[in-house]
Image (cartoon, rainbow, N blue to C red; front, side, top):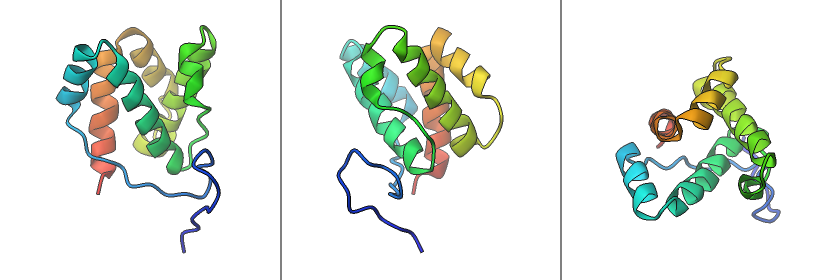
Length: 117
């Protein structure tokens, strides 16, 4: 039995979301065309999807705070590694996202698509 939280949107604990299938190439194209605004939107959406799988990822507001964003991206990579890929390569995904964000977006979305319904 799946417990669905009746609390506000900010609380993802106990709430299972459907993972949305997205075209990884379009994620890059939209991010480029919107000068990165879509990339932030996509990051928040995928963070919520990964968090619904059980990951402990902090608020996406940290993306815009210098140095705190490194903590956010580390926890995002950790959630991705443990709950999407189910491996122990957090540092690899973190470094990929830090130094090659377009490639990381393709990898992250391609793997999330495998879990999409």
